[in-house]
Amino acid sequence: MSISGTHLTASVIIATRNRTDLLAKAAESVAEQDLSDFEVLIVDDGSSSETLEHHRQLVVRLGTRFRLLEPAAPGCRGSGPSGARNRGARAATGEFLAFLDDDDFWCDRSYLRNACEALRSHSADYLFGDVVADRDGAVIRPNWAPPPGETLKGSHETGTPGIRQLTPRYSQYLARARVIHPGHSVVRRTLFEAVGGFFEGLWSNSEDRDLMIRVLDSAAGVLYYQNPILNYRLPTVGSITCSEQTYLHSLQRNLSGQHCRLRCTNEEYRASARASEAWALRQLADLQARNGSIADSMFFALQSVAAYPSLGGLFFLAKHSLNCVAAAMHRQKP
Image (tube, rainbow, N blue to C red; front, side, top):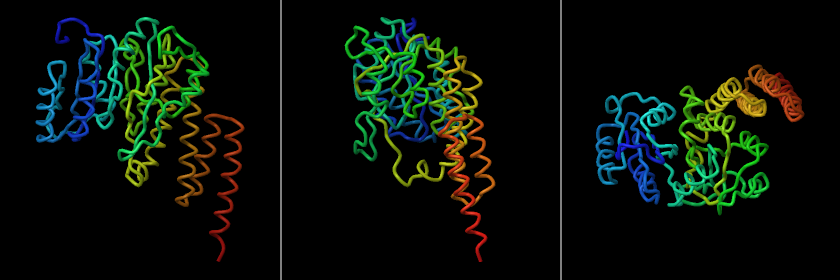
């Protein structure tokens, strides 16, 4: 039940674990929103005792609209981003759900109010906005998700300033893009529940895209908010996220494609899922080739074409096969 005893307009869910300083900035950006009736659920997914105490103090400081969902025990094994977000969604009372990562922050204080009003006015289920991407505090891309020019071509005016309605065809294009993120999205809670929430078998950002494809597949209407609403922190070059986990990320992306292919009802979105699966398999093929595992590399390359047959896929397979043959011959030289 909400603070007022009635359903609120929106619930904002922030999953976190041991990132106090970053969380504070994220939560403060939500506290500045000018919507009158919303709640914020901070889901602690197993922070240390010291960090958990900081989170308790943060919630008290930010006011009664903030709630902290504590872990079973400090430092316990968490359920991961998907599980933590789903836990927050189950506790939420808002008509609409918004999610924010603890290392990002919102940069438009009217975003939540404008988004919820637009979704109600136009009987839509899902809204997303533009993103500012930065790395180490320096803006890398001021309009990151997705390219504004493309979005304008794939949408039409709604009569509400700054809000556009996407065409079904452009929604299908979005499902193939790699820039969809819950942090710049608002979804009707009934739709989130209907599609099953986040798939808890995924992580490494694959869970974000997996949910968005299933939401786009089932949404009655999709709106585009033209202003940048999210400041998204890109990982530092050379970090674990950028290098050591590339292989695992590709495996997760492949699993996400399979999951969406089975869950989506429209053929267009099933095709998008297959394309995502093929993309991940190509990444795995390239990684195995660089590691010298020629047989495994060819296996993934063939699987990519089987997942999503296309001229581009066939070209990749031909080029990849030649490279693998050349590498094998080079190894055989005395």
